[in-house]
Amino acid sequence: MTPKNNLLIGVVIALLVAASYNIGANPIDFVEGLPNLAIIADEMTEIEPTLFVTAFWSMFETIQMAFIGTMVGVVISLPLSMFAARNLNSKYVYVPVRAILAAVRTFPSILWAILFVIMVGLGPFAGVLAIIMYTVGFVTKLQYESIETIDSDPMDAVKSIGVSKWQLIRYVVLPESAPHLLSQMLYMLDYNVRQTSILGLVGAGGIGFYIINYIKFFEYGKAVVFMLVVLFAVLVIDWVSVKIRDKYIVKSQHGIEVSTS
Amino acid sequence: MELLQITKLSDFPLISTKKIVQMNNVYTSYDSKNYVLKEITLSIDRGTIYVIVGQSGSGKSTLLKLMNGMMTPSKGTVKIDYQTPNMNDKKFKLMMHNIGYIPQSLGLIKNITVLENTLIGALPRLGKIQSLFKIFPEEEIAEAKKILKQVGLEGKEYRKAYMLSGGEKRRVAIARAFMQKPTLLLADEIVSELDSVTAREIMNLIADAQKTMNLTAIMVHHDMQLALEYANRVAVIKDGEKILEIGVEGDKIVDFQTGNLTPDEIMEMYSVDAKK
Image 1 (tube, rainbow over the protein chains, first blue to last red):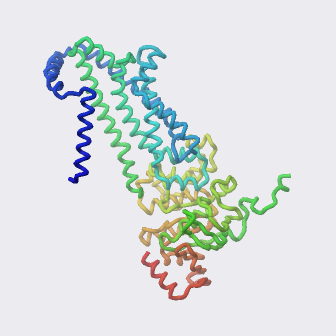
Image 2: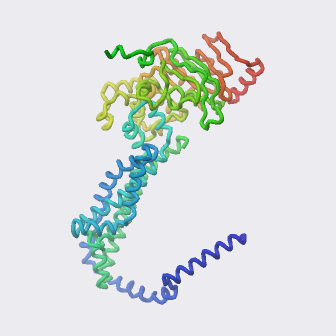
């Protein structure tokens, strides 16, 4: 430990304490609040099994919302990412596209949901639109970043045949970035299921609507049924995406290892 | 009226002359200070195999990139069939359709099949809609399969490129180049890191194509032995300068241009190349 390091650690701790004081984060409150948690946990054990059917149907609705949102979002982001990639465009194209995308990403999906509830009214459709916006913002960024990291050798080799830019995208950029795209789609679907679960908070459909209402009325035993279903669904989706990843992505990663990059 | 406007030889894109490549006093640099290539003057006959030998970092790969327009010289002139190579020039782009270029890394697309990689060579002949939906005409597919058979990849058409061995990958790259119906083939270190049997098989493929397709093959090697065995002419590049050019007929050296080199220096160079 050099004196410089000690000083740095001291500064970080001082900042932590100051920030905690400013926002009123008091560890003692946390300890004193623990018994309340025990009360909630106790009430949560009073599960109402009759609600499982409703919970499964609302989860099914949530997954469908997430699925539509992810797929449509990815379809929109694919061409957008081609315009945002620096190795395919001049800066007069990618700078404005990136600026718009950054603006889209600024809002979390819950804010998009509020906006779309105002636009199209309460219900799952508003939630789907919110998920689409969120997916476009993120998948496009992930996608153009993976396009920018693809090997320049196949690009150069195919460019030297004198092909058009669209042929280059179709025959080099898409196949080279396809494993990344699949992986991003799975990640996004996984993420969007969780996202959609809370969009119900603002009336944009899905299972979150039930959770927030039962919690509001202190019916923790009912809320926990829905939470368990969310947990179960997320675990299943996780398991399925691991299987798909193993089958399609890990294999092609092997291909990357074989070539020199 | 159209005909009258053609006043220069360069207006005929595929004019047939004896010399296919002409370089005159070419200098190139990446950073405008140090020259990668200096004073390169060479001319290459149509339908011959021309091998450029040199150590890594001697500027050999740059020399190939000058010929397909991926680079332009800082000084001097490069002409391919009387045209100045430049990949951003529309007229030269037409010519690039028939210049096969195999980079050292081969540039295969690893997630698609051998057949699809080969068909990429036919892309310039494909319409917009066809290429968008990957619809290749039957005769192109038949041609690709014929070429794959010719390079010894029969039965492996539907393998993914990343599953192939090093030698097989080189065959795919050659098949892609042949699919372009090339007049000129530029191959960068295509047999390096191969065992001598496989290396000769690959070289035989190119030598056969030179005879049957009247192909001009310009290749970069670091193995002098193999170069002398297959080439009609061998040029030796050292530190960006051409220090030696040899004409070969059968197993005889018929022409020897050394510039200012002493026999001792040539011997030293040979030993350097043997060590790679």
